[in-house]
Length: 411
Image (tube, rainbow, N blue to C red; front, side, top):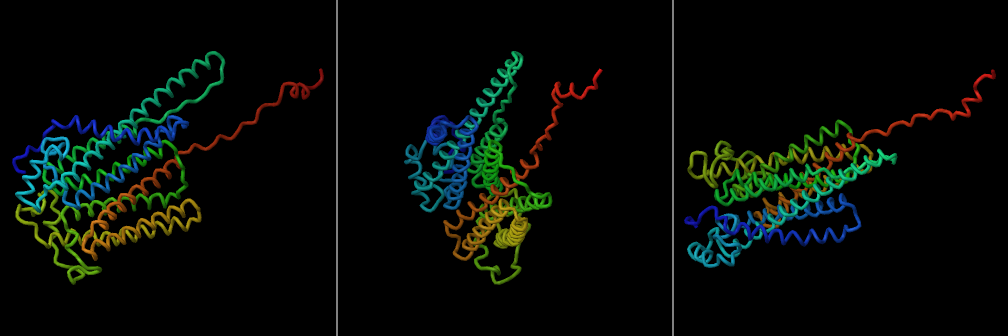
């Protein structure tokens, strides 16, 4: 494994083509189901489907990390220079024979490459979304030019708008950055800061796709100004907590505390924050290059747990205030936030008390992704409501000329 070149771009074209072929299936499905919808309708359906598949990709990424499959293929973008583990079977077998419990096995290689295939397919779908946005924008401009010509000929004016491609363009740039972080995750041997940023990038991609979908079919939601600020505050707290959770997972610090509510029999166990929160260090290493002390893992875990109390209280308070408005739409949002908060509490406790089972760990990542996405959509809809232009009050038309003539005095 140490003799493998970190980057071998020979299989890049074949992997990209395979990802594009995978993307054709959901694209055709959306096109057939939305064939009677307009361009904006088809684009929104494709964006929502891409959002769903990206959520699945985030879960599969968590599964890849939690099964120690991140180095199943120790080079990028292929596997020992091959497009799939089939072509690398001999190299994988040699690595597995040398170290049966090591990072390279046939099963782990397939998990890692499947993750790469799915990520490439999502990138292809996002590229298709951008192309559809550009086509729709061009059609709208052509229609606008035609209407302008009609006005010159005395026809009634009209208005033509198309979906702005800016969200799709930003999403494509973001997913390319995600691909770069995915490559660094492998070539830098699961460097904790890179892996954590890769996780946050995946959730950021979900947010961008959700905002893109909302921009294509606005659903304004009246949110009082104080609640709008509170929602922003909760969203920032949740983002910080997700980053801490990623730091826990990438440093394998989940089992540093195997009991609740105490940790190692103490309310304040021995902790080493200095080593634990040194960001620029390799996996398992302290800030001085030596082994990472167990007290550092405890500090990482316990900080995430303490922050969870703050985030849970903030979510409960926000849900209560949303429900107290009496607005049915906001009450539904309050219920949704409560459900996700309960999911996160149950899966988080399951990780601690059940010894970090795979199902609970993946569920915890999914809950974090769902929570951030929900808050982003809530804020987007509140912004759309604030951006609505009030309808102009109609101006009374003047009286007909015949009526005005009756009011004139007789000569």
